[in-house]
Length: 259
Image (cartoon, rainbow, N blue to C red):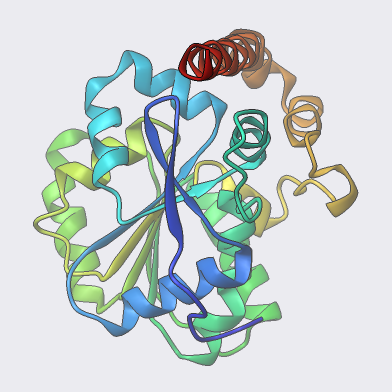
């Protein structure tokens, strides 16, 4: 795994939303560059569900456009191919999170984890200390808290000396939380990672490499059907319809231009 940036990603659009074209090594490199520079950087993952949510939440749409890096999960890569806007590769949220671990350990970057249950955080801490003995955990706070506690949590993050913050509270809650505290957080990088802490803790398994090219959603559904069946039943047909509609309209425009 590279520990230095290779090239800057090219930004494209999908259904009116931003998406960066880069591979996993370049994504790690971009985060490394963010950590070496000043300022605040929001890394957001984009997938079919998040696009569906953004269509119904103007604040999420605005946040995605504001994010310094928007990484594409496989459904987005598939859609961009259908629309003749090919991306370099699939860079899922949990995929990037796991790829960052050896880099963060090597560079001794202090990390703060916000989200999930306290038991999951403790299991994740145990797993990380075993796999990455020099990994620096600046702090951890479960994701179940009241609004009036947010200022105290932000202060705790800032006092910890963390340079990167991972927020696992699901969408759009995690994106809204990050944006709400964007001006007050002292970290250099914040990334929303959904349910990825469960994967790092070993509570849930990540999709194996052979199923990642389009079958990740099914793999996740089998592991957690109770919470995911409604989401996939709603968002997947909507997403496929929107992509096919976009392709048909673009082909019609193209024929009209050349006629």
